[in-house]
Length: 382
Ligand code: C2E
Ligand code: MG
Ligand code: MG
Image (tube, protein in one colour):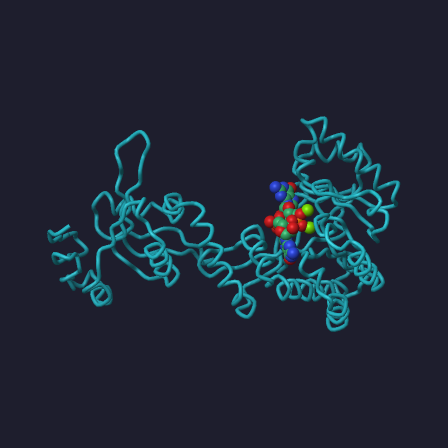
């Protein structure tokens, strides 16, 4: 490309030299002088989707992360049945109150810029190679996760657990990350990265301390005094030699009653070094804390180990509850879990209950505790 470019709109006017550097930017009042200062001498970024390389993408994300206005980022979107379509992302990135990126406030009135105002990052994301995007996303998450704890960007949401009479008897604490640019992120978006990097250990300690503070606060609020709080443990946390000490210390410093705290583990944590895990779990229950086996039915649990583990509860995974009304196999599995728990002297929570029909069938099968959107979504305590 060797020709010069220029563009005129009611809002602004610019010209570029032969190498497409912004050579002139109009400083009429409608155009903020800072834009001119920021863009003079800069290049127009124009790339085909196929050519969207790491550096371009990271540059774009960095501009977004810095909430930096920019004018032209052009992308060729291949459309299978149509001609190729150019999309120009152009303008000022717009974020909502929660900090979530919502798109671009376009400058100019040409069709592509108009389009750009409607396009969101996800439109772009679709065009980047998925594997590479995942890697970039994970790298970003890992980088920023390290700072999130000190920046106090984590918070806990609490989802009610109810009885047959729909009375709330406890809550599960579920981690959320208030990411300054990406908005509120659920654990699916960062727990794996945290687990992989080891950051889950300090994060898990924060979750536990924070849930215990809530539990201590419950003690002075009569309707909540008997409520339990369940906290999810990660495999990495369970493998920490000082886990039991740190739990003891957190209970002590927050004043939370151990008898109201539940820890949730999953079957996958029982695969490695089961004998050592059993000892750790026994030490935990010796503190007066109860243990639940989360997502039960999705992993591998040998029945003989189930008997040896100091568990007081099984949580039926939501995947079985989801198909309960339509899939006789899932219904049979749920029934079997309920019978198994009964014979092992454990209680059962059915997870992911969304429909009255599911609640009724579970009730008929003998389930006595429930968790799911039917009774309440996870929410922050205010
Ligand atoms: P989980 O422990 O099995 O938590 C239940 C998940 O199911 C939660 O998702 C909850 O929001 C969702 N859920 C509850 N009821 C319903 C329903 O009726 N329908 C549907 N579709 N979903 C429902 P969330 O909060 O996204 O958490 C996902 C997972 O992330 C958790 O699954 C848990 O394994 C993990 N996690 C959450 N917080 C923590 C934490 O503090 N530490 C660790 N290590 N893991 C956590
Ligand atoms: Mg759980
Ligand atoms: Mg679960």
